[in-house]
Length: 128
Image (cartoon, rainbow, N blue to C red; front, side, top):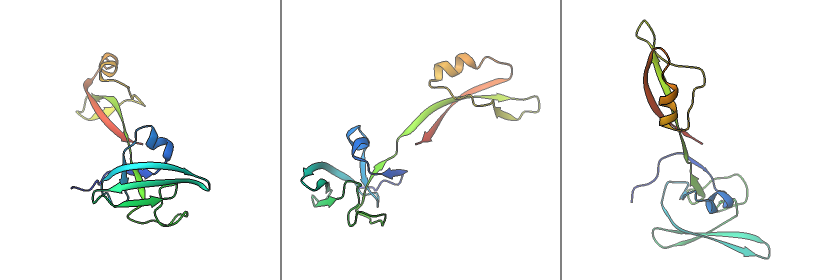
């Protein structure tokens, strides 16, 4: 199985519940995650591709509840925000983007891209 090499953010139970995909800090796949409510707080259990179970603190840390890191720490794959920009071409043939023109859809960007020197509408992906 190929390891994930994209941007990761710290594990957060609420973000995981909202659909963010878990991954181990070293990029290894996480098959399952369960959150157990215990008398002394929450405990997070993950299952890796070898079907081994790992116990984590609620912050996703495998070994300690502090800021040290380990390959078995739970992380979340960062989501990308997709935006659209209009590219323009000046009289010298140089391309540029106008001030802060980020659009939520390609259709809206193209509708607004009717100004002089409009060249193209381009998708950009911004990691959170």
